[in-house]
Length: 134
Image (cartoon, rainbow, N blue to C red; front, side, top):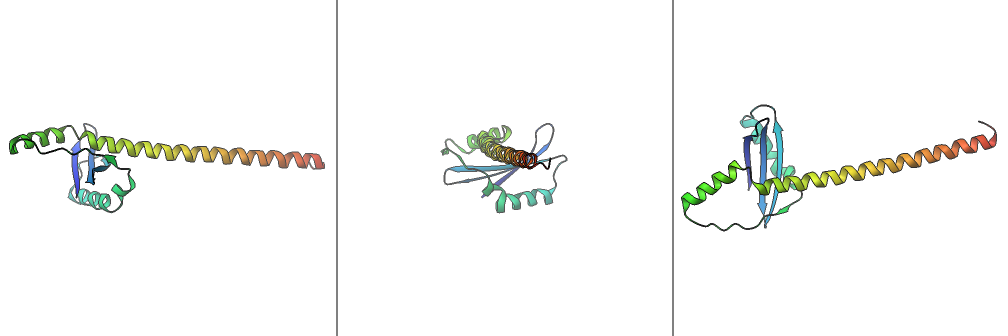
């Protein structure tokens, strides 16, 4: 089951999708400039279910036993909703770190290719100068 939360963080509207399965939590978010309507929320939920949540790394979600009565659980749920859930933020942070690693790998791969290209060009120019074709 995917839980979609819509809230305003003071600057942007945020759509937050969460799925908890087998003790792990996955979360994705999308920022909106203006308040999202029902079609945007449904579209986000559909995207999150089909591909968004599968592309992010899972974060361990400890089991929280149901303690206390109905009113206490309701208060705790409200408090969790108002703090925007620390577990979701941990899942989003793990996703950001993973994308940072991918960007670093791409950058280093591109830099290595650039070094090899420059080396080949230098060798080619050197051979041409040696052959007297400057």
